[in-house]
Length: 275
Image (cartoon, rainbow, N blue to C red; front, side, top):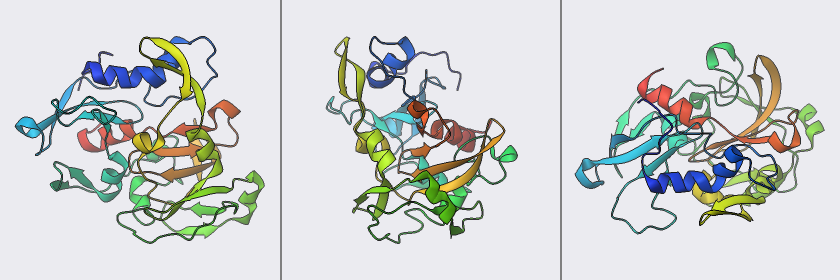
């Protein structure tokens, strides 16, 4: 999957440009922020099997944070013409989706969800860890904990313990997503609501940066603290799994970089295709 920085389709380039062109190009008035997709594609144009797509395959392209897909090139050119893959669901279930109801079974991904690679990040939860706590493997609904401080800690073996000492970060639940029954921290809701510079119709304008349901999908786990190595340094990191992405909150980071998208695209490529 050679990557030369070229976009697989103009529609994919347009999706990337809206949020990440301002970051890559240093747009006037830009407040520093983290990538939504990544600085450029990490693969070339690829065709992957998908039974319901014309000819039985769809056009995809990988980025650090996700995968873009065009399931039907003749579909209406609306917001959902280019979609984000359900990569987090695939990696934690170990099921590669090859159609609306067609799957290939594999072992769940042992990539570290956040921070350095799992081989040098011994305490970091992996996607296989998430099986224990995330939909669709674990379909338990959490109670609405709006306003409560997040102190749940996820170990790599999948056990969850209460760590009252983590209340020092004062990260509180800001809302409850009732579809699958999971709480969302206020720090993530604030991130979803961010206004900033985006690239639309050939010019820079101020808008809401992301439509979070389009980008993230639904939350499929509760938010959990973990002890994660980042650049060889152990840190407390809050993480939450969504259908399409993982969000992390690192209190020690500069305020503009405390909330970041996990490198789900990188992790998925290694899981499905090898290093």
